[in-house]
Image 1 (cartoon, rainbow, N blue to C red):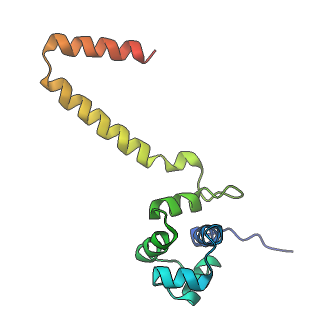
Image 2: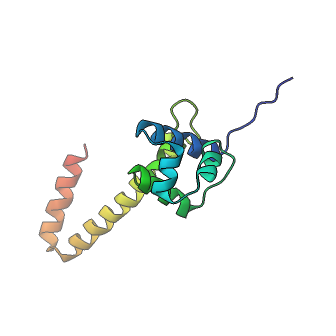
Length: 128
């Protein structure tokens, strides 16, 4: 009986690196030269055998011309077999909402009470 092995994040990172490298027409050697990561280590990353550090991920991402967080995001959301579900990657949206809420609160504190009530009523109408 065959056993089903669960993929690790390293597998998804490897698949994503391979896809991005291939899409850009890089050989392993060319990516190694651009990133400063050895060819054999890159091969092991692509095969999911190695867990790259954040420094290595950043070097690879820079060489591929993508932000490191985009590389990780695509690895986590592999279309065929996602490591994470989209709703598990909402941290950035939440952080942005928190920043906007803080800014609104700071601005409201500087307003006259009548202006604050007006803005509040406007926000209520817009949210319907």
